[in-house]
Length: 425
Image (tube, rainbow, N blue to C red; front, top):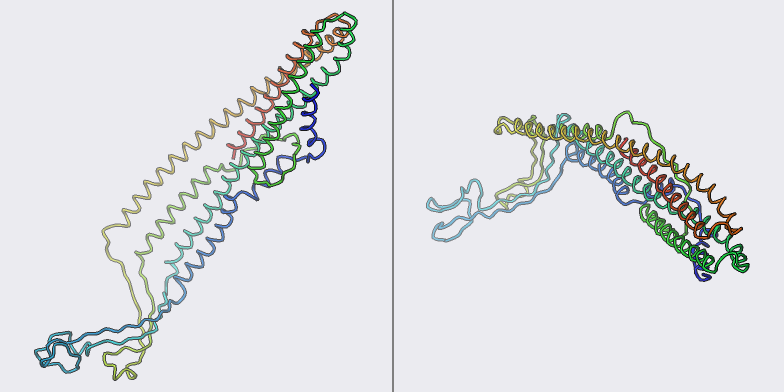
């Protein structure tokens, strides 16, 4: 008995000396700052900003490159020689036209290409990139919502262990306060030795239950820290969770998601349609281009021109792509309708559970009040030897069960409130 008391005191000591009071908001804020998926989502916004710069670089900035070529084009069977390089081949020689190659081609050029009149071409690319950026940023809300629900659920469950610890400690204190009186009555012969043993056994059982609840509480704190990615090793004392029903938003998440996904399909179609627009680019080059190495210095020059591309026919791919996107849009609409149905069902079920558990708490409060009155009556009669210790223990056990049921009911109200808020967004 003495060892168990020391063990319980040892595990209770951190709560008394080192405990830091924390609220559920503390863990949520830490989780939002530390969770890798949220950090990744934030970094992806920088990715899309850079993608805009890439679109600009590819479609507005000059594209400059240097090319160098050497082509060896010999003639065969020229004037009795198997291979020859000459600007004046015999009529019977075999090979490329000497006027075109002169036996070889030597080129080194600096080329510049600038797209022009392409504002209508690159706007769909900017629009698509913005939509994808918006979708990524919007998905962060789902990540945050999932994380908040997990943290709040774990907080509520862990706090329940604290509640049970508090009322169980009161029961242990009552048992401890009765023991001196029972001991005196045993010595006087008014109670039997087994009455004292029953009281002692019940106290030992309660102390073990208390120890298990403290283990569960510490483990629950550890899970909370893991969910919030907190490295702090201190023992936290949890403040009562303040979880209230949130009002409905102006527009639910699933509707906003459907709108963004639909816009993304439109953006994809617009990007696909770019290839059907007339494209114009200005080109220029300077350098050396020669078929006669001996005249290479005089073959330096420059050229400029305009490249025009006018799409005419590609097998009606544009209409086929539009039909594909129409199918995908129909699928999105089906998912939207299903999301709406599931949300309404989930909200209704959660609200119903909240009402039912609140009604249960009301009844349990009435039962606890009556049990406390009964315990006040019985404990005085135990001291006078008018009621058996077993009757007192049974009343305490019933009281403990009712208190536990109330703690579970209160926990369920909070859990279903959190679940309601999770769907009501």
